[in-house]
Image (cartoon, rainbow, N blue to C red; front, side, top):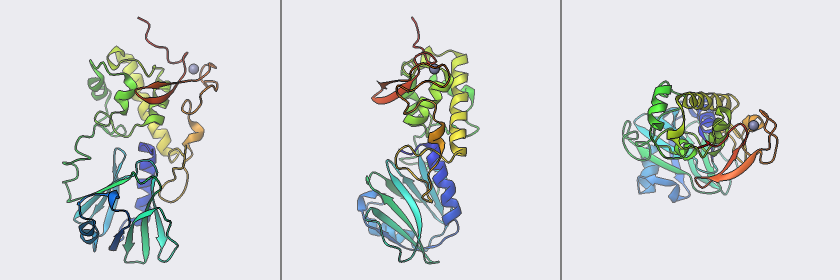
Length: 278
Ligand SMILES: [Zn+2]
């Protein structure tokens, strides 16, 4: 599933591709992608005649800001966008097509069909599900060390599932949580409340630097993810721990281990990330 760096890359690419384009028609080929409004004919009709002013990101969601509407899109496992010229052959997994008045088309393709789209009036989208319960943006000024410490304070939850909970911090998924915890030298099964102030500062810094580096690299292409222009990110070559079971830890030379934490496959270094001894 694309995480913050991948969605940020898609957002940036989409802004270069569709900013200022006016929609003259929309076709939904797989109704279940559209969650709001209930009636896909209304979804199609409402978007006609509107111009995409820019694309923003909130957590792992894309927000298409149009003149008078906001389209919220989640790519889930394998959703992707591509800009095509009219008449180019349609992929059988293309489920939504936005036809622009300049003859180009933005096509949403999703092999797994788990992606979603919700249409709102401006301002409404941030007040209603799925965006209204989201936590702090880790690459924004609101993500201070103090805010992070407040969030972790007193919680019995293991630190890995806490970081994956989008109600606390958004955009972090299984890849970047393992990377951040390794960089900070913190075992993924430690409880949030067991972390010292110094460890929380280190983890805060690790989250910010890991996500920033990944954004700069255009995200990771661990499976089939590509950005909005069909290009792969390159951060998978910089991963320090994720996907490296039994390989040698770059930091200390120990063997990378994999276990299950909070139901998720988890990579960690037993030397760099010791469990809390009690
Ligand atoms: Zn190590």
